[in-house]
Image (cartoon, rainbow, N blue to C red):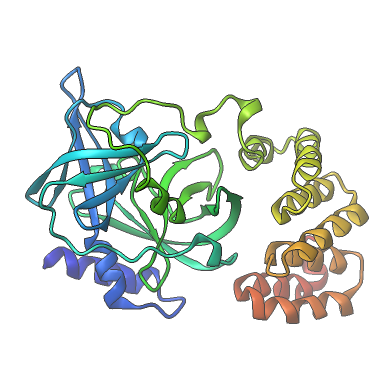
Length: 337
């Protein structure tokens, strides 16, 4: 009970920016388990998982690479694993346990998330005996195979691979999987993919080997991963080449056009940047980042009236971004544009 009180306090402190369902977030917290197993060298490997069905736990497949006999634990209780259904490339594995007898968490939709939406990551970061909770927000969603791979600012550490990313109603929207260089670069696989795991062949042999999509060679990586390093290193000429190819290959992808606009903005091609941001908005009117960047650029061009119109629209879409834009518009000469 002491740990439950701790997470309750943590949720109150970290997630008080928006309304949230305390009881459902508590249930989400108790759905988190630890995956353990000894490696060939005798060291103890560990990761996290989420209870998603009757006697079923989902985790990342890469958590199961180093041990021949993994098991699941929660508190002082351990559970044996009977079988696994694995999608190695998507890096999701569905474990069937013996007599888990725990209530599963509701599975939500990554497709329903919007930029700036509050999220909570819950997992055994750094091998913590009790799950740790960190608040964050949705940065972007990348459409793939019927779900959106989620980029968020909800932090997780070593040991939290396979843990849960939840909305404020306690719905599981993603499985925390990997991070890239740079602030806020935490990626979660879409919860929708869990449903498809149940149709895969049942396996009983461990370890589980196989390359995940985020481990692919650079030329085979999805475009949203190809842009990560150039953005962090501020290699704008490299970035614009990648985003140009991205928009050619995926012309209806709002994130592709947004990133292409951003690359142009960083190269001081302001009119082109605005054009591409508007293209992103034409595809997805909820792309608040594109609207935000247009507002900044219109303000920098002296179009204050237009910038304020954008501010009004942005306030309904993403209040946090609206506050940033409002500060920029109203600071006048004291701010760097």
